[in-house]
Image (cartoon, rainbow, N blue to C red):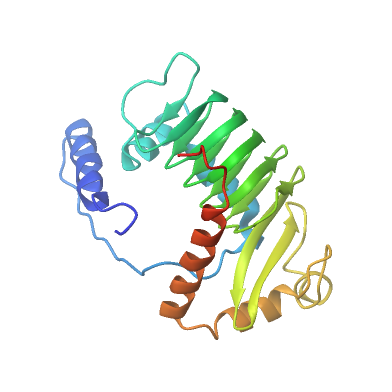
Length: 234
């Protein structure tokens, strides 16, 4: 509710519209489990499909966008852009969905960005969720999730990148869309793709950080990166 303070009201609105169409009452229950501390990198395909559901021209997109507060038709370039976005004059966007995005220049096409903060971006058929970096490049079907970086970030096609907070610092973990993380012996229990730790050890050590400390550290890191952005950025 910190990020979407009116989420429940939006859900009620969606339920009401469904009730009107179906002609019968529906029941809704909501549970708030707080902020997640672990991004399940093994669910790349599912996360890509879930986020890109916002671009779906059918019923899935209508409902998903309604939950996000994006009503009506797309603009002339095929975009749904939230009122909370700040885009520079040199940003070119088409066939994308943007919410809470701050970008000064670059190209965004067929992508979904939620809470992205960067000066320059190049995203094509990709997604980002709540990352902050001076520059962000996302290849085809690439994704970044809560990345915090003081240097430009590049995520090649079909890869996913996330920043995990550990007791003694942070680590960036990469995984490919085709990586079989269920093969624990070869992909989960040992470091792969140049990652400094295995996913098993990262999960174990991340759980050792108390939730309040984790939130404070993440916010402090974001403010540090944000302060180094271009002075002309909003």
